[in-house]
Image (cartoon, rainbow, N blue to C red; front, side):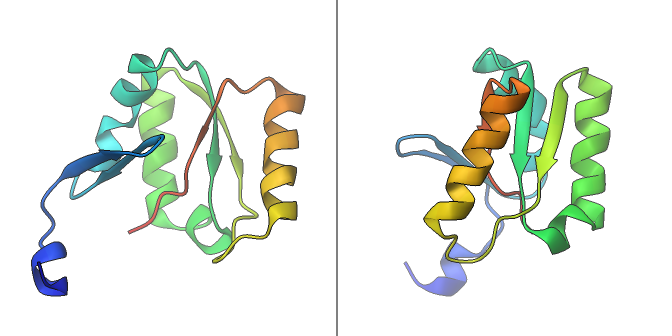
Amino acid sequence: MGVTEACTGDRFSFRFPGRVSFGDGTVSDLPALLSEMKAEHSLILSGRTISEGPLMERVREILDLSGIRYGVFNGVEPETLVEIVKAAAEAARGAGYDIMTGQVTI
């Protein structure tokens, strides 16, 4: 499969060891995915630019409507350092989050 074929926008899920969901409209599936995992308080991991843009606005809107409590850790960077991962984990533990939801990107 070439790059062009891989970037068609087709939706898919991938588990290894967590789940990766991809494709148009996938962000709308977030409440159902969190519910399936019995998560009630999610820490959304994001980079600073994404956390201030329209995609995160949509994520917040969807989670607000679903009643799922959440917070945003916006310190994720490309090739994230271990120190940043540890800081995110500490933030999750300290505030009682029961799941960390990976970076949401376009």
